[in-house]
Amino acid sequence: MSDAAARRPFMSTLLEKVRSRLPGTASAEGQGALPVRDFVNVASAQPSKVMGFDQPLVWVTLALLVMGLVMVYSATISLSDSPRFANYSPSFFFTRHIFSLLMATSVAAVVTQVPMRTWERYAPWLFVASLLLLVLVLIPHVGKVVYGARRWLPLGVMNFQPSELAKLAITLYASDYMVRKMDVKEHFFRAVAPMAVAVGVVGLLLLAEPDMGAFMVIATIAMSILFLGGVNGRMFFLITAVLLGAFTLMVTLSPWRRERIFAYLDPWSEKNALGKAYQLTHSLIAFGRGEIFGEGLGSSLEKLHYLPEAHTDFLLAVIGEELGFIGVSAVILAFFWLVVRLFNIGRQAIALDRVFSGLVAQGVAVWMGGQAFINMGVNLGVLPTKGLTLPLMSFGGSGILLNCIALAICLRVDIENRQLMRGGRA
Image 1 (cartoon, rainbow, N blue to C red):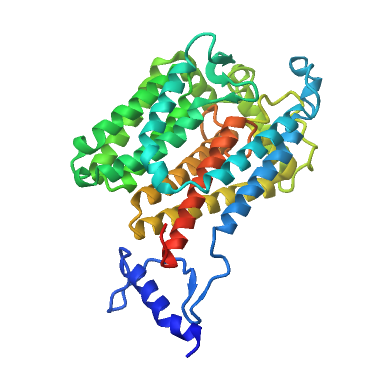
Image 2 (cartoon, rainbow, N blue to C red):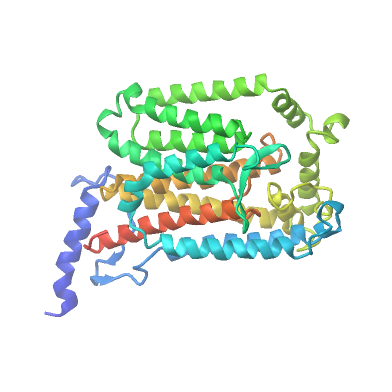
């Protein structure tokens, strides 16, 4: 008997055991099964060619990073003509962005070697560290103020934004919290109250900066992980209503937030077009000029000092103007694929009894998808203006760094999934 023939019964049995542990798996009567990626060819009992890691996930991530680099260069090449950036060379932002990408990808390569049990062990401490940094950034002469917001810690080589670390920290902490609270998840107050306090503390620190956009993303991540972790559905919708009420109250009690909402509702009035809706109107003009195929790479007019922050919050508008509907659709599809892939990785980890890893992967999916959705909605005039960048693409060292670290952790989840599917140890 050949080696392949000898291995076939073992591999078939292994795959059947894994499938039998999935919720919703087909029974003997032939009910619908939950799809699982097969890493072993059962017919030949030979390992799949892609055994080590999820190559499509890596390539899509790199494609978004490279496209972001090109578009950041296109959006910033003319900034040196502005009096505000007169001391900068035309390639200043491009060079800084290359440095950020090299640092982020190097750190991400190291992160893929860190076992998930290590992240689970240190998740609470990472959350505490993020809280300390959020407090530190509010101290006068320590945190850097830009446009009236105190959000950055100057570190010499880069300005670090603690809110980006808080997004990763809340993802890990909430996942670890749900694993520890599995026995009380049906009791709403016992399961949710401590997590609500943690999110509330983060929210107060972020609103003091102020950074309501980051708080919205962090609250969404925490709520999603609670829901995916199995918290009672009716109670989940109750806390959703409470959060929506809190956001409504914050907008109502804040005059400048109120003005921004009114400007969003009527951006083309003379007062709003020259005031709070200035960015939005020029973003919409950029999309209108791009039409289907765009004006061509480097041919944007709105980036020529008409559209503020074109390389950060409104990078998608430059993409729309230069690459048109086709370019914007490619970006949207890439993020959609990325989110679905991360959810599949998380679902498979949970099926393999690795609940923490699964919730982390799905939390990162909510983070990437939610922040991309808000940024795209702001650029397209669907949502009120928020200071959120487009993940993996917009200029910003700490954002790129933490995005790549989060995706590297998800890649590690997939690597350990594949090791378990081969019958090894994670």
